[in-house]
Amino acid sequence: MRIVLIALLAIALWGKSIEAEYKVEYGVFGRVAKSIAKLDQNQTNYKIEIVAQATGFAKVLTGNRKEIYESSGKVVNGKLVPIHFVKKRSRRGKVSIKFFDFDHGRKKVYVHKEIYKNGKLIAKSKPSALPYYAKNDLLTLYFNIIDTLRSKSGPQLFHAVGADRKTGRVDIIIPTGKELEKLQHLLKEEGFYFIAIIHQKIFASKDGKLFIVAGKDGIAKKAVLKDVIMFGDIVGKLVRKQVRE
Image (cartoon, rainbow, N blue to C red):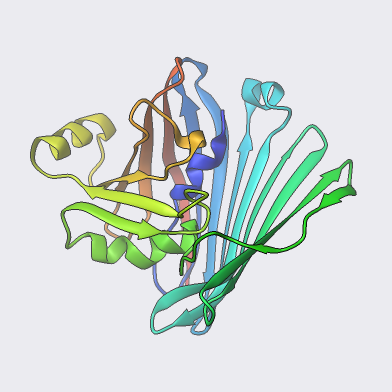
């Protein structure tokens, strides 16, 4: 029950501090996780943090699994430009952290990994360049494209650090017609619908697609990952949001 899918439920309101909480349910297991997403932004800098943690019976099964995603950087011409992106996963006293550093001038992204056991550093890799360059990470990608997606239709191709390991590829599909009607029936929410394909095993449902509906303010209201393994769907739903000027 990799609860990282909730990282896609990012938030997109301009020039404000936002906090949103989501509950995550998994088929017959019911509620298995909660996630809190935060955005702090001013005229020149931003920081996004998403914390997802197993709850209830899933907390026992996963060894108190917790995942943290952080993106920080600058605001340039109205767009979020990442400088640092961090993926942190912990369970049963073991913590794995990946640090991604962007060099936009040279079009390079460098990554290194640290592993801790019971608070002690036990392994550390040397920085190395990713086999691709992307100007976004998974979190800034959502913020930077959500408004423009509303005016598009059909398949869209993007790249983001944190997606496909070899290429960073992210496929976005804007559904229309009967496909849109099916999604509206599935998610049962008012808003803007789109489909994200991240090309990672942790998102491997039957079709590898994450269905998302966002409100007028850009805040994701609900997401569904269909037919995961054999226990049903993973569903993330917004339960609380707070906006501060």
